[in-house]
Length: 279
Image (cartoon, rainbow, N blue to C red; front, top):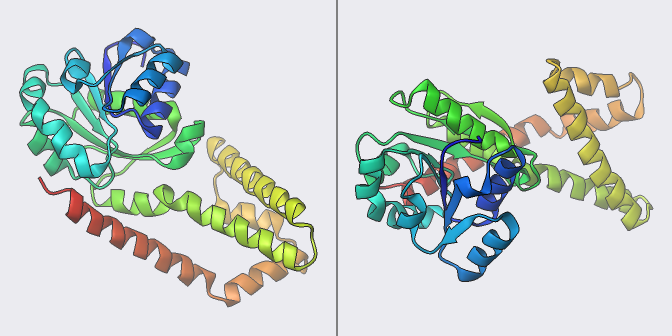
């Protein structure tokens, strides 16, 4: 986005990542304002990005056509509710990245007629390699959906889901997903060390392999050939070392283990939504 005023409510890690990504894509610093309660964070935002940072959320949002809610879910209501008269007057597009907060709650705090989009980015957004799930109710126009998509594309890949409940699965998959890959790399490092490889070498090789495999998979998706099973088969020579390892993993029922992990994360996401998402 290069035109229109954007306001961020919250200038923490994810807010900073989005601001940096938008600036790199051509948004002018004078088109971005931030409402941030911590003085040190405000000073850092202004110094690093040249944007307006204030402790007054209403002042930050006054002229915004797009507002990004980038605060912890526990305080989303107390941040948005006082702005309701302003939001009713200006009717901006509100994009919430507050995990678990349902559109019903957001619409209640913002008031009728304010378009709301939910976004679930993940931690790799901090380095511009994020994956974000987006959901909007039917009342949000195609033009507004396009704006939300462009904002979130500033930090990586964007995928729309058709049902709000699917964002809980997005949270389990891509939101929590980096931890699963880090765990696998950690276990590979430990296993190689147990087999005699020097720990530093094992860790560097595991991390580089994680990085390279991700790049290969992403490149395949970008060119229209994102078949993960095919990519795995291309690495797995019949009778070779990879086949031996994969058979060992399959014999331990890795598929069921992963399925249970995703189910547990999805279930916990819905529990947290009930806890923090009530209006």
